[in-house]
Length: 357
Image 1 (spheres, rainbow, N blue to C red):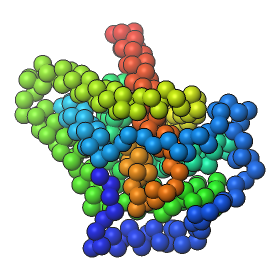
Image 2: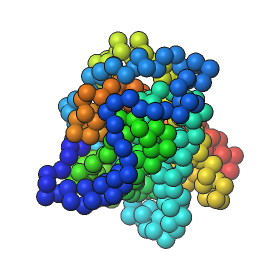
Image 3: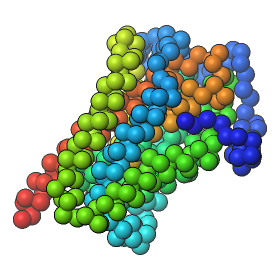
């Protein structure tokens, strides 16, 4: 879905990426790695090099089904959104600005510190840095709704960070990846088709939100009756997709999950925690702190997988198993962690409302 753009559409992105990467050496042979990177911390993660040759069953059809599921979720979420929510956000932009900083400055920096601390294999480290460089995932909007957070802020951040990913994803991957392993053949220039990106954002985010809001405003009484059922159905549909995707790679996950489970747990936990503490420190209100935490902790790992499996970006002769496995497990785990956090915050909010009443 995120294929390279045709020649007529590539000029802007090519200029940006050539500028960003012109001083980076892309060697296909042996690469020098800092001594700290050679042995995983305390060998907690086993021999991560064995992931390099793993090939996951992931294709364009899988990506299309995932996007349909996300669009369905967005429609259900948007049923309860009104234009006044975005107006309030425009009048008080601080939470949105903090959210973008958390997404594109804080998370990549924390990820870099984490890979220095745990010293995984270079492909796994590059997978972690690529996931951190991606925008927020659309599932975050559903999780924000379930946690009774600020859905309008969540949708705005998802849309905003997705558009900014045209520049920020390549920039962050080049910068932090270059600091970690500048000679790695996995450090390649990422080209994201701007036309395809905008089209994707409009289809899976824009159209469902517009239709959902319109239905919610035109038929408020009907929506009150079906809103919860639609949201539950959309979540079940997405869970069914995840189960299907996992089943297609079940033997591989069983064989290798122990190598990356703790890594992704730590990485994702740091993302949620950092995304909460940054706005809290900057005196953003509690609801928006939760929203920014969810946006930071739920990444568009589907974009990461699409980039990894694009042979024009990462040539097929490279050993990409470590990168792909990290992105794939992130795509499952961040939803599990996000839902747990959402129901915890939802329950906490209900208790506070009960006490207040």
